[in-house]
Image (tube, rainbow, N blue to C red):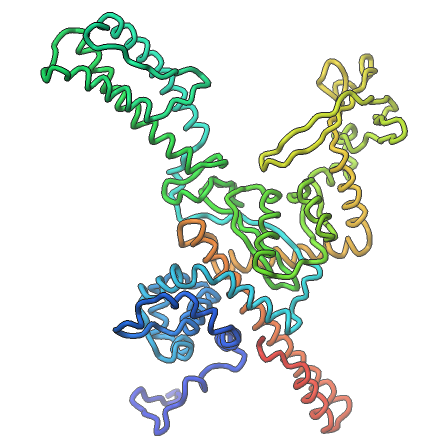
Length: 556
């Protein structure tokens, strides 16, 4: 018979162990506990200054304890308040972190969505300051990228701006016909009803729902002036017109409300009006947000949420949010071609930040494919004569200068150059479709920035930064989406989504601190073992122990 190790479920302990004894010294929960303990208590208490809890009843839970529990849960991929409450009842790490207190899921959600909503950005900034003090980050070279994350919204309930405009146009056309009918009926019965002042309903008219409701009310009032319903054919037609105008006024009011929610966006979700339809990584169109992240040495040092799917338009708000949070200004910024726009380059240049930012045409410039033979980057500029020379040696002369405004409102100055010797050229069909000849529209300021960025990126230092960019910033998104299953926000509304982003950023940094600490300890043990084998002296222990004391990270 096989013998197994005996065990007893009823065996008690004369001295029950402390929960602290059951937790590994390098466990993530200790990192979270140490970092939050370093935060300013006045900052954590700020949401409770105007609280009425002190007037009677039980006092609120300690904000430090609640922040530890929530951040630790996010660091473990647990975002449901009910699941967090369950962990507080069953998991020894949560029990130790909360001091055996068990707030319910409503309380946890209230702390997350209400109490911490306005101070999480300051908390994040405070943690970054701790990382700066301990030397984890220094804001020298930062890496920027964005990713689309789905909103907590139904993908089938999206309102599109183009549909709203089309429906408004159809309603205006129908209302215009109705106004003409009312005008004819009004002229026929002018002595009885008086004259109606009908609003204009042309293509450029600012017809509002108040106008339609006003005309409908005027018709109703005129038709009931003798306190009896008139049964003439004209009265019936006017009454039908009044009802139709009332319905159209309600529809127009709905379209106006939709336009107000849309703002400058092309779409929004009925479930979460702050979310915009975006193309996700799996090529699926869903309501979501564009999350911008700035990282250094594997730590998240800045983040923002944008309703704009374009990374370039979201970059400046990211740096402005960091400036508002009083975080240091980086010395160098590394980003991909999605950020290579004039306004981004100008913003960085004005603040004396070195831009290692690619631009959309950089691939075409380096490519040797035949389809790029007549790409505009192959045209050489002669500054003395102010002409461009095509790959076949023909000149493109200056024609005009004009201004254009992009979607974000930024004004760019463009110079137009045209070749008048394209007729008869064998390659004309491959170079241009314009019958008059090849035309180049050039932004000289952007061209200058691109040359500077090209010079930065093609150097030895720039190539090293380009190689680092992948594992510096993409690791953040991989950790979020794959390891922590953060592929969809749980809260709705832009403000609450920003709160959730900072929670995820704090949780990610906690995990990174734990990895650095464990790596440091592992390297320390490896160094001790190596020295002991080589030197065979006990002084190796003394040397390494002093090294540990001098370089101990103490988790933060």
